[in-house]
Image (tube, rainbow, N blue to C red; front, side, top):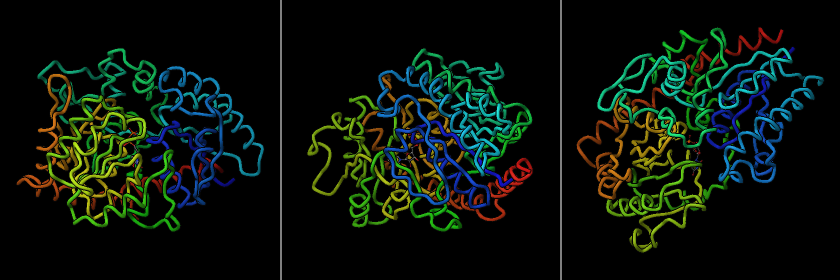
Length: 453
Ligand code: UDP
């Protein structure tokens, strides 16, 4: 039987992106791949890929998806688990009686309920973490009582992690009662894998060497990343032009035409990803900090966030100094020669994308795993600086402007740029033929071939 891998992402932008790229790399190496995507997402995005099939299932929110449940995320998770698991099972049943049945399932660690369902049909289940190895290790060890939050002012460094202070930990380890369902999902996501199970990480060995070694003590752990489209990295996958799936429509021509008129390394790209909401005060400080930096800036402010901005003339000098868009083609932007700095919330995809495309970063973490990613950006990989917050947990305009200058103009910026170039090259090497992630993927394909016989 030919290997056919069913891949189940958690249905949000930051999880679909890496699993789609993983699916493409896998199908490039032979196995057939099918992404299980919710009805809402399948209906709302233009999926243009020949390499990967998509199969719909319902999360009970066919008209709105998670966005329609922002005020009650708990209800969405419950619906995804109950209705989603039923319709996901129907999808499996249908395919199993076809001429091309599934032979394996790769599930996002945010949807662990898929394991029980899939095992009923005798399929091996493989976990995929869309977070860094360090963050995955923290969640796993913390949740199993093997890692404690350090006292204020102290650090912990075990399980291959660098010394971390309290505020470097993912926000859900503080158990402050916020977003209980999301906190539960994050903390419990590694309960399902057993010792011998494959657990795949969107990272690469060179980037997280020590921590991946430690994770191998628990699982058959492998890095297969970065899941940045081949078009921007090794260029081995042909026809990778329609490389991504966007839930919001990117304002591509506007962004690229605007950037084309800017000098090399002159512009700050600002994005807080698909989910984070900034407080109004923070949005205003950021706007004024960008103005104060006196750099060009291209800032993604989702439509739902745009009311928080100051009046245009208060922070954009002249016609051309700043551009606000509701969604961008982020990878093309980061790959553009005009970009000299990425001011990011440090979602794991954005962090890896900035790193893989060699863009120095200003890290402005908000919650979940972002503080940990920001710590690694500044202190471990040396590709950027992390902002300091004031007593109200707001990053002030002076600090924003200071950090941008530190990354783009100060003495330290040369070293940051050197590190950024180094990691860009290392990321590419990991994906090229014979690179660490490429070899790990080959090994995984051998497993798929053997288990589908
Ligand atoms: N992204 C994009 N256009 C934008 C902003 C973000 O294409 O204007 C993409 C970005 O390239 C990344 C994903 O959306 O792949 C965001 O994932 P991340 O993990 O960085 O953050 P999240 O949205 O999960 O907080």
